[in-house]
Length: 108
Image 1 (tube, rainbow, N blue to C red):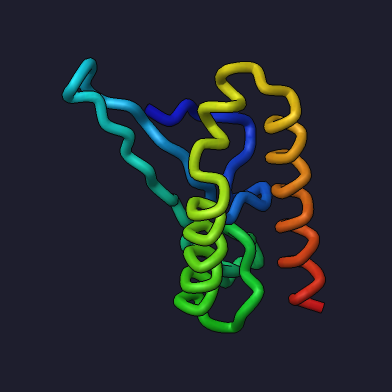
Image 2 (image 1 turned 90 degrees about the horizontal axis):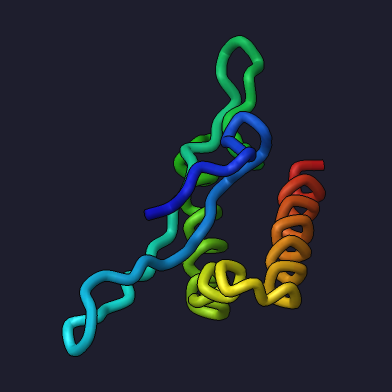
């Protein structure tokens, strides 16, 4: 199961993707998933997720477009990080930062 980390949707997290492994032997399966935040700016100015568009549903679509593409291009990134593959850990962190910059730039 996903483990809670330090980041949250009120600190700029828009979504993430990963995988879990269930069963064993012949019954072993990998289940891939993508999680997206309902990004919006609340009436009091609090920001949840990465609200770029004026309507929250558009932010949800953009987040899932991004996360599902990442799940397609690097589906096993979590396994590599868990295994201690420092190269994948660095790439994953760079992807996160690049994604954040892209979202922030698009809101200018």
